[in-house]
View 1 (cartoon, helix red, strand yellow):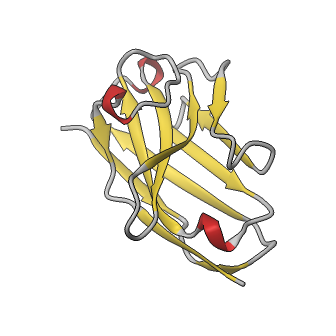
View 2 (cartoon, helix red, strand yellow):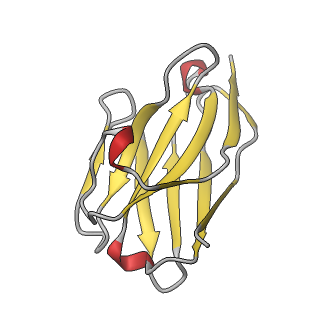
Length: 124
């Protein structure tokens, strides 16, 4: 079955950097667009970044654009989220998700598979 396993979440100070990883298995990885979503306490899960199946197209929410970078390694079935200049408002559980369309999209409903999430806490 399909599994998405996130890692790399931790406590970090504001202004710091962190890289999240997501290991995928059970799917033809290069056919799927991958996304990173996040959910803060008491808030809706929101789109952060997405990357197409080929890795040639990316998209970002306005709140992370210029600070976060999504990338993927299709040979290793991995997707990454490099987060720089972190702010306390970036504190959330970060989820990796896979979209069979192969196109990086920002809608939660577009994604077919989800990981369990990894906690990122940014202290001020």
